[in-house]
Image (cartoon, rainbow, N blue to C red; front, side, top):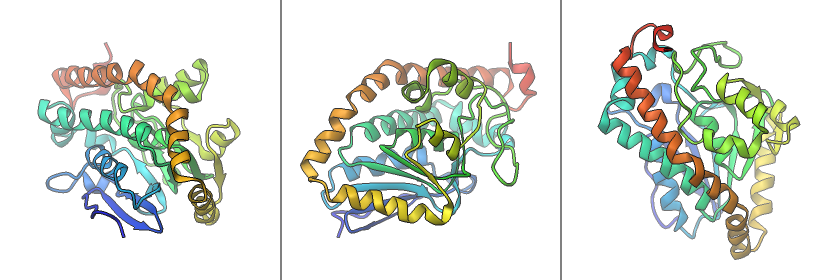
Length: 284
């Protein structure tokens, strides 16, 4: 049994056989609740608590339902007062911005291996969670994209529904700091500046994703990774992750604070110019 109960409104958490599974609820649902439930705030809190819970040795993060790991909201949401309250109000910015910093650091520092089980599209904050994980196992047709510079051009797989901000914003939620560890400069710039969308199969060919498999094989592959990790010496595995992540921590220290600060400043600029206005008028 776990040492404590994990109860977060934007997450569904279960613990079994030393493996904690965190299921991310779609933000299209949680952001509409009163008050909004936000994984930017809940996920780092859950992981911080799990760091000292010795009943947990492996953590799996996945989407609540197949088809979506975690995706940005609709362009209309980001034009709304509700979005402005979260992203451009000082109190909202404090909670969200601090949550982003906490998450990147705890995913790097927690001694327990984290597996991203990408059971659907990871667009926006979702792909930051993916790239902050230690292992990435994904359904091969999942779309993965950083949406900050997407200008509402990024679309969901299958439906073709636009997601993300209708205006360009600095990528400050972690991926801007992490992507240079995964891609060479020219490729990273295309991915971040143009919000290029890749499938998990594409990223596997680029040696970025550990495995890209059909959806029906995803559970078995993730279970294989979890079982293999649990067979390893617990102390040695924990210290090995810590050793391997020293360069990740150094990269975060180099870039994360400034990227988060630039994004928050950028959002205040956009609010001043007209948060709900014509996105092309904001590009000056």
